[in-house]
Length: 65
Image (spheres, rainbow, N blue to C red):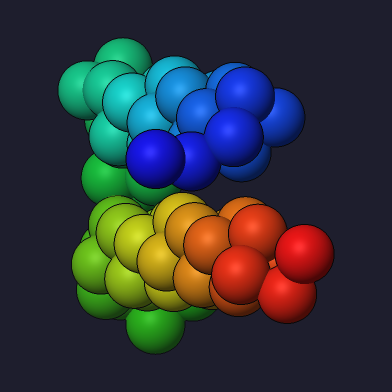
């Protein structure tokens, strides 16, 4: 079982992920970019990469202690 600070960080990360992928926020990025392509796929990829990276950092940090 994970300790309390790690659980709190993971809950916060879950809430951050929910916020990043809410449809109103996604619609802000669903516009043509400078080359005529939507920047939505780039936003989704970067947001997903950040969520995965933070999850790995939180869990590895807990493993070291």
